[in-house]
Length: 152
Image (cartoon, rainbow, N blue to C red; front, side, top):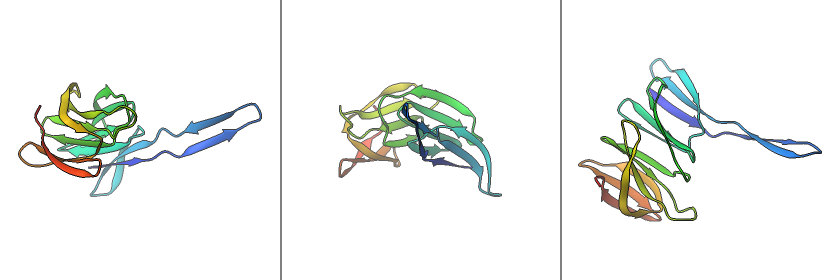
């Protein structure tokens, strides 16, 4: 199974009285590889996506969601801020934020129910995060790559 996210187009509607913007909510596509076919879609404007085992994670400025490979939502938690990086390692999910206004740290969530469990200290301005062996993460902060311990 694979998941693909589509960035939404913005449709502008103009009238004499007012101007409005209708935004397509975007879709997550769940599909099989062999044979290639879409098995489910879910409306969600994902900014970042990640896979771990048979689960898929998707996040935007409103929520972090966990889906099964067939597109069923397993857990959801609200987010504040626009995430720029998402990764999972073991039973932990990591959401990273570039600095948009106030600096936000690399947040840690429990994989099973996406409950917040803490932060990775001293790591801000996260542009990318990738799981490594032995409970470590490769983190791109600003223009610098770092290896950090995943445990709190």
